[in-house]
Length: 55
Image (tube, rainbow, N blue to C red; front, side, top):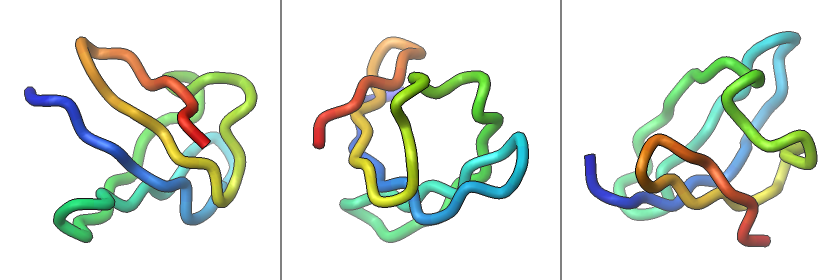
């Protein structure tokens, strides 16, 4: 999978709703896969099976 940028739209318990900034597609992902500092409104970069905070 190629690198992508997302924004955390909503935190729902153990899951986060992400929105792809390029395509607008929504993704539901387990919070355990995200960095601890990921919260609503935070931008994430996904590459090589890893999410990192970019803003």
